[in-house]
Image (cartoon, rainbow, N blue to C red):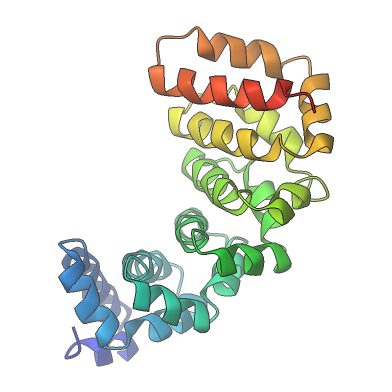
Length: 237
């Protein structure tokens, strides 16, 4: 991994892309391979590259960064290099793949408490909320997944309201894609703890009937999380 690191600065896009593809495949094996990449100093480099690379290479940079943060040292170095802020800046990309991978990587980063706060303070909740209406279902699923991670905190639950994130969550309960619905149900269960959100969900004509239909449906995983979400929506102090 250390020997090919210099190739990330190669002037030829194809060379950079090929090296990154090889590193992504290499880092998908075991945590040992991930650690060798982290030990070679990749996290800091990858955060910088994510912000500066061309569109066609950025998704590979983000995928490799995602693998690096599976390691505690890789996570710490990525956060120190402003990985959260970089991922948030890429949510506006014109590339569907970049939007998807930046939201996916942000979601994984936000399992760390510090990253959640950085995301909230960096306007991440609003940007992710806007991606809930993205035309690509993969982006919608990734955005909902990242919101799920961020809204485990009280500030995240509060931030969803000014970010105008509740209405699109309601609409996505009827999304055709299972992963979108699953991530939305988990996020809804989180944010329903906020009384303002809970009132908005209860006042909706579609939320409770849709949750009930999912509970009675054949998909046991969706039914399980719809049950949790419905209980959160109907909770009375």
